[in-house]
Length: 128
Image (cartoon, rainbow, N blue to C red; front, side, top):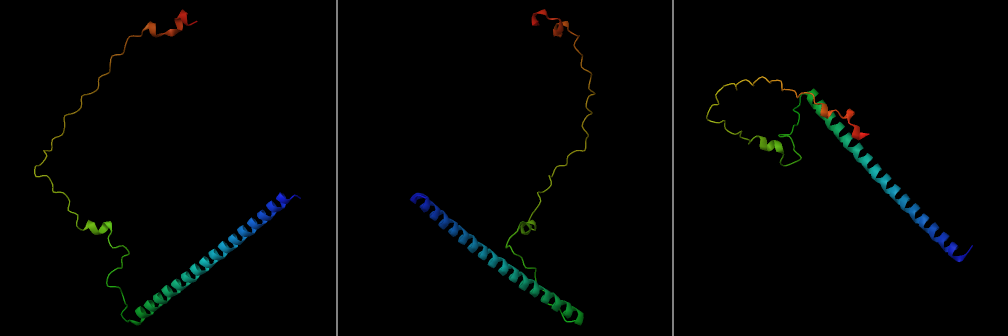
């Protein structure tokens, strides 16, 4: 094996090792993210279950249940906020008379042109 071939093989092996290490690092990071997300999801669901259980027990025992004074909104302003302030345009002051338009004239059959022999190209000798 020549020197250049040996160098090429060595660089290829080094690049393969780097790529494999990168892939392993990315896989580890992804698995860690996934584990964190699963853990967070589990905690959130347990918290929600505990809150629901506490509410249910409070409702069964007759104690007053804590409710938010107003529904919490994520966004500060939405399209529906402006619906309350919408004023429709005022109706026109004049009244349109309720008159039906005159009936359309009945369509007449158009006169058909007389059959023209000149339009029949089958008897033209110059086309042959």
